Image: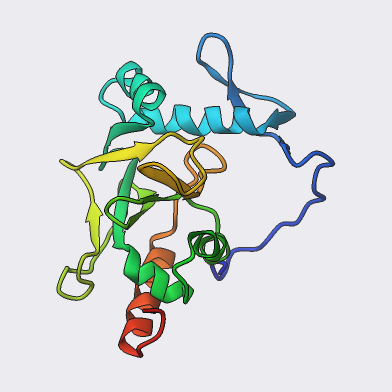
Length: 201
């Protein structure tokens, strides 16, 4: 699903899929700088560096990723998160097979970043910290926008397979690449409608 009204730009794919033009990377001093071509690890490093901007202490959060695979980040600053029960996402995707759901989310969102907590069976769509979520729990039971005064356990950006505690089913491709709130709302609505119709259970 692509966001209407936004022109789509197409470019030729690079010969090596691990390289992308124009993405930034961290130098030895931890400063992001742009290069003409970067590897997947460099893109992941750039996204991780951006996410650390939501940490109370960058060094502690970085060590949490290294030691525990999950870092505690603050919502309401550079990012917020919409928490969605897995049954709604699975209903919208018409499947509970995680690899198929991941492929569905990559098609549904025009970029963005989504991870899943496998233990609680909950998806988290990252949205801008100033994003307005107008829906109540009564309208969308179990769905909540985590803003200020909320902390979120975010997996290391390198975790992209459905194993362990949590993983990125829609990895952040570049720093600050967040979901559009209207696309998150449309996903929730689609899942709710599918459950009402008896599909995707």
